[in-house]
Amino acid sequence: VQLQASGGGLVRTGGSLRLACAVSGGTFTTRLAGWFRQAVGKERENVASIRWNTLATTYADSVKGRFIITLDNAKNAVTLHMNNLKPEDTAVYYCAAGKVAGLDYAYWGQGTQVTVSS
Image (cartoon, rainbow, N blue to C red; front, side, top):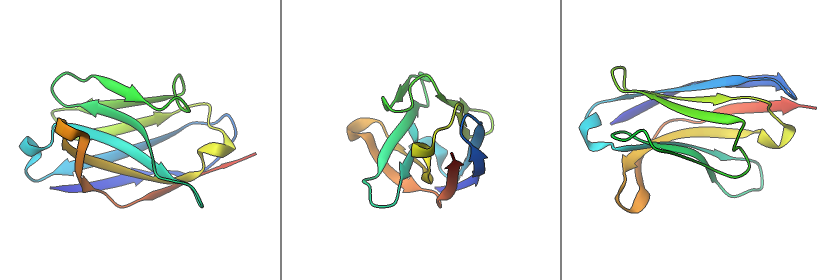
């Protein structure tokens, strides 16, 4: 399974960005997808996740009401729509996929930098 992330960049406070993740190869084994981020000096954080079958979503409290994760089943693409961005959202963002059981994210894409200027 391969994940290819795209998007990210530099945006001002209050702006919006969209991160896209294309999932390929053996997607029948991936029932869970999510976006993580890691800021300098901080622990990695799961900001949003979505289940392939039910499209049920979960969000970190820090992004609720601002970020939306979507899944295009036909295209095997997972998108993170980020709105009302804040400087504290600055981080490297990663997409990941895996199994619902145990929230096992076995597959990871490369990181993409998101920088929010004040």
